[in-house]
Length: 547
Image (cartoon, rainbow, N blue to C red):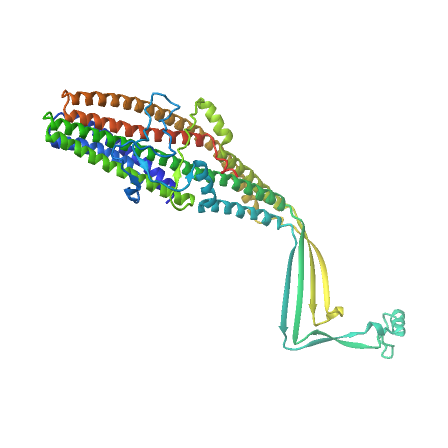
């Protein structure tokens, strides 16, 4: 299972569940208007369940919660971790995440997002396979050039014949001049003269086959001209360039998964801070309930209600810690590091403020997928040219060397020959014409795919831009709701201290504040992921993906 599946998709899948659970908790809080202990418990459990779903979204295994030290409400700041506001580029009025509630017992090196990219590029097996695909495509170029390079082969044989065979041949060195004169001066119509002098005075027995007949052959063939090789070589280079483009796309997708996971880990850390604040807020409510009970202004039910709230939120905090460490482990496995490490809170992502038309133009200009599709057209055109060149004759030269123990007619055991040949395939039953028409259709299909890809890119940019606008609006509204919930909780707390509000109203206000804070963390994560996705859609690529 990929990192995108184990961290990003599981985390995003949990967002819908969190929104639903929070809405249920809000409904339960609104409808509850009694001081009965059972109703109080239901309200508290609704809030805890909502925060449980947010913090445990990416859990596949649960590391020990001992990795965190509970400060029990004390002010302990995390080392090397400056406070990070929610989307500081949106509105300065958005509440900030307090990092004074919890201290992480983390060790190991600081791994920034850029360093995580470098480690993934170096260590991840999928990245290595992408590089191997480029190497494989490069071999196609050498294979295309092989059509024009010499081919050399050797052959050795040992033949056992049934019988030896010889042939009687004259010794040309024993030519008889008198016999030659007789042949030249003889009347062609005269009968044969048995007393005529012989043409040759000596004859010899020449072996043409031996019982054991070893032989050694060497053949070299070189193409002098092959019209098919020209488009084939060009097509090999086109395919190689296209594979490099596809490799850049694959690398960028993997780096995008690392980026998304890294931002989610950062948001999980902020989620821990939010839950820690909620624990401190619940403990403060418990302290006030105990104080009011001691002076006779409260009841045991008020204390129990506050105790239940503390336990539920502490459980949610522990789940958030487990989810954080699980996400860190998943990222560590993906980028190939061992042991613990610390993250550096990533920078805020630049918001795309350009108009939709400008973003579409950027996407059509920079998207590598479009360039790869254009290469498909070029490759298809080369293939048509390759079929058309099959009607042009092919010329080659062949040199053969043969060494055997039989002299044969040449009188030499070592023989060689040089052959110049032309191969011209004029008609093959119409197969080449059908293939040419088929590849011409492939050109038109490739051009249609470019047009479709452009339409898909325009649609994708429009959808991602609208999604970004929606997520930004949700984050802005979440910030306002947190501010209102904080003010409401502050007012109810003051009224509770003087006896003007009961413990159920205080619990409801605390639950509402806790829910809104969690929803703001999730809204920020959704907004950041929407910005990342929009940037990827318009053709923003990591420099590591292009190397």
